[in-house]
Image (cartoon, rainbow, N blue to C red; front, side, top):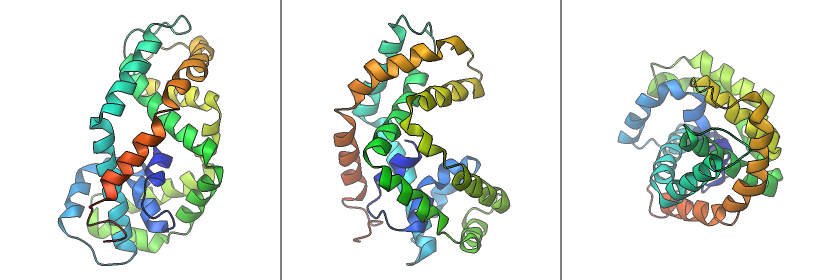
Length: 232
């Protein structure tokens, strides 16, 4: 799942620290091995607890998402669309590209439908206090560089790149960049237009009638009986 999807499925979308916690594992990927230890102790009420719950939500929702039938079936279908297309010559790593596209497109659709929610998302993150974040990281993620994380948070707020996700050209460029970052150079620059056409004409129409029900079910599963629920 991508940044905005993690926020969208929170059971409380008005908590600054819960919101930051829900995206913290993506902003601080190098600290992931330390996250599981956070859940051994339930922190008391307050901003530290909201950060902890947000991180828990991120980790658990990713597990549900990637192990669920929706992800497996949809990624397989997108992969088949890519392999069978004339617009893109990619025949290897199509499942990986499909994985990337699925997560980006869900954010794309959520942002188009809920633009005001995206504004609120950034507002909430901007309301978090760096001193409290630093204290939490030093205590619970001691191997992670506090200043590095705070600089990443600042850049995340400054760039606000999720605003660009409403444009399918951005989805193509982000996918292309991710492939190149992991050493996959099989998608050629000149094929970007073809991939955009596939996304617009075939992939989005396939995902559109399915994604909301899946996110709703995932949210219910995550928070329905959770000790971390805001109602708990």
